[in-house]
Length: 83
Image (cartoon, rainbow, N blue to C red; front, side, top):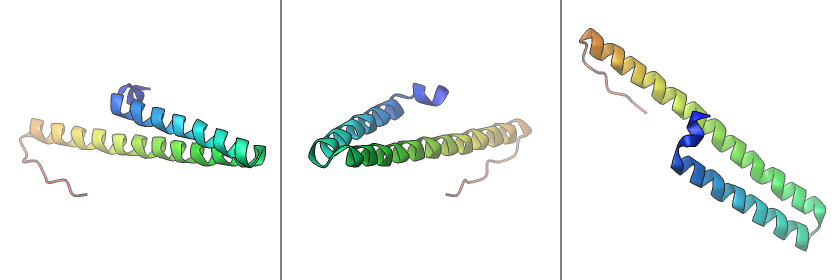
């Protein structure tokens, strides 16, 4: 996937993975296996949500770039993008 070639995204996902393993190990060791599984699934939900958000934002950026390129080719002035 092209999105995962971005170093900042890989670093963020790497840290989230490390945190997931650490939280799972701590919960498993202190409370038991049910807490460990709960911690792991909770962190994985966050990781999947972040991936979904990154994909959505990337799609918006690509669409905006295409629109700006088409306007530049047509000689129209670029419109301001509002967030």
